Image (cartoon, rainbow, N blue to C red; front, top):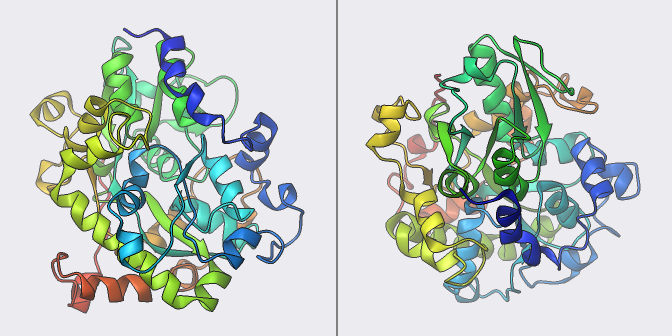
Length: 408
């Protein structure tokens, strides 16, 4: 097993450029302090997103995880340029807090964010963010120590589990699974015998923390689950896409004022992303190598880890119980750009039942139907789907609706 310090060292040198990842910044953002951190009050784009608002160059911020794959492939394959846009080298950051801050401060004008984060930013912090498309589906799991004896979510009673962000699909799905198993999620130092204690931890820190015994498990995006399995002898407890069928995780976001002022820019950016997702579906292993340390170096992770994270969804996981719905025909990670309104509505409803740190009062009275219309601008992806017929049923409006499926 790799030593915890060695796991952390995989990432340390990659973050020198991310100078806004100070611990006090992360803590403030994790607790919902975005508005206070960036000047207080309702955040207007003017003055906070100068670079993004005044520069037509596509400026991408991303976490070095597979959630960012479509954005990275669009950059690597030249799809932004082919659409007629200039694009800067994507900038990696260490945590969701840092990415949300960098986007809000105008460091980036295109980013991927966990689906609940834009909900929090727009309706709690009054920040003008718009979802343009889904970045991917599934792509996450919960792992536990290989010798922990934890076989199901009931086994997490009395344990400590790390999540990457309070406003995350991971927190929503984990708490759903805990409640369905009779375990109460809590946010405090110790967990009672019928409780599971949750804490925020940046994704790069999770495998080392598990290996050191500081946590009993973690739920996060790939490739940190695969890294935990390979380097820290972690065991996959369950894939999130086997709990919520083909769920959204990260979405592609832009600043509302830029979308309104430059719709052609937004449409071209979405075209590039839709093309990239189609390429990812057909070329999974090639894409894994492309974004790996040995490829373009977008992710500071070896190709074998990325390949496992994007392709390994085999029968061994059925035998272990990590996959219980093989009939769903899901993938470990998949790529589909259409933002189903039903999923947005379910997320808003689920967020109201999810324990978070800080004031979540903004969720009270928040109408899921309104959010699905107000937060998401789907006109660009709808047009892109018709331009790129790789997507089955893209020209059929009936194919753009679905019923959400959750089952433990």
